[in-house]
Image 1 (cartoon, rainbow, N blue to C red):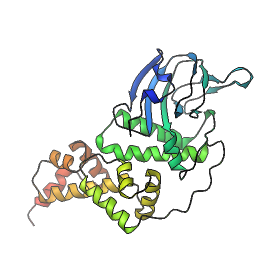
Image 2: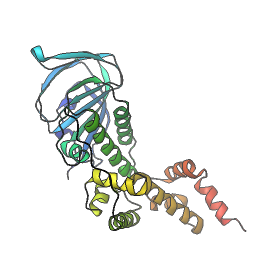
Image 3: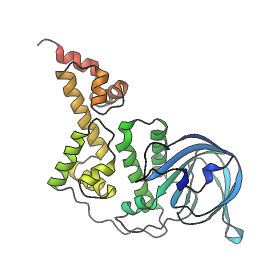
Image 4: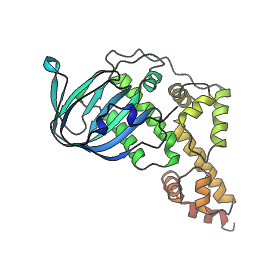
Length: 293
């Protein structure tokens, strides 16, 4: 599946008044495109796009007007406010002031997967607040801005959670109750576990794990958590940390080499995770293992 990029957006980010700061371009993300920028005031109309648009306002108050004639609505949007425009609809919009934003463009496919394969019709939102969606958007922006290949599974997890939140909170018609979650079969869990071990040093998208279990990414994520009590990212991170600890205790490879061989971006990444989870650094762990007993 090709990467999602500017060609899949409404064209808003190609305006002369946009000052980009960071984006997910070049990261291989296929289900969404994320971009943060400074925007100058504008008024424009845009043709329908194949993606659903979510804009998080980082500054304000800024008055935004959408629609034409008697159907137009306007609102002063504060920081944390969300602007939502569904795929396949024309957009007429006017922004009265400069502001900082994060744009997220979601595919219809990821929304359907979050709704058990059923179609989703999102509402047009103007300045709505949703603390969970806000934090997920900020999390995706942070991952794109400070990209590490080992964060691929985490980015996929945030994408799935954001899609599920929009299905739950921002559909024009309430989503049907999801089916009861059941876990993975022993065969599925074994196949996923083997894939994680085989590719422990590589970026591992949730889509690849889901393929090993013959499920869609959203189905896989729900069933994996039902089976293990953890997200795929949390589980994979634990496996990587366990392997790093074994290598540090029993081998002599440089710590930086151990980090990369276990799927961490660099030595500092391994140190940060190990200190947070185990309360020790790689160097301390290695010295303790080598100490005469």
